Every structure is written in C-alpha cells, then in structure tokens.
Amino acid sequence: MNDLINDQLARLLNDLDHLPYMGRRDRIVTEVLETNGVYLIPNTLQPGARYICEITLHGIRATGGDEADVITNWIDAAHDQRAAA
Image 1 (tube, helix red, strand yellow):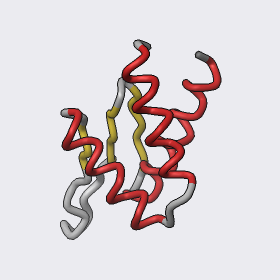
Image 2: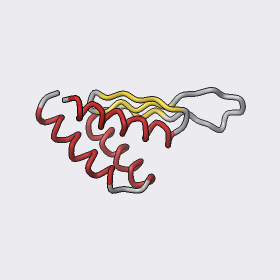
Image 3: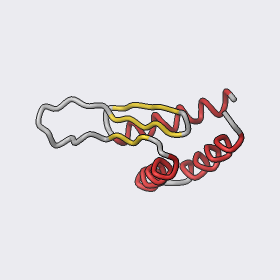
Image 4: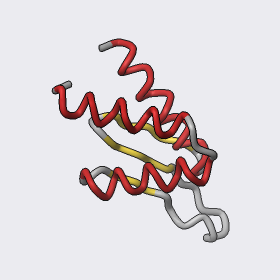
C-alpha cells in the first residue's frame, strides 16, 4: 500500500472510530465519492429479494447482508489490513 493511501486510510479510520453509525455511513460515502470507490446497497424494498451489500475503498473490499453489516465489516477489514502492514 503506498504512503498516500496509507495516510488517507489512517485518517479515515481515526474519523470512523469517533463517529456514531450515521456519521460513519456519511463519512464512508464521502470517501467513496472522492476516491472512486464502490458503495453498493441494493433496493431492499423488493419483496423476496436476496441481495448483498458491498464497499470497496482504498483497495479493501467488504460485503454484508445489510448496510450496517457491510460498514462494520469494511471497518474491521481496514483495521486488519493496517495492522498487517
């Protein structure tokens, strides 16, 4: 991971660690828009629909069964990647 992405990821994780859920959602969506990431939350209003949510940001991809789950999974994966670096 290059230094610029590593610095951006560190700042993002620091911000997320101090925000409630809706703040985390907004912060991640903003980062996705600014960095050409992916934030895929399908329409859950379709009866009987099966779906998966996805976030790909700073080279880290996570999935989940709903929006809260995918946000938590992405944050966990990002912390794991930072710890391994």
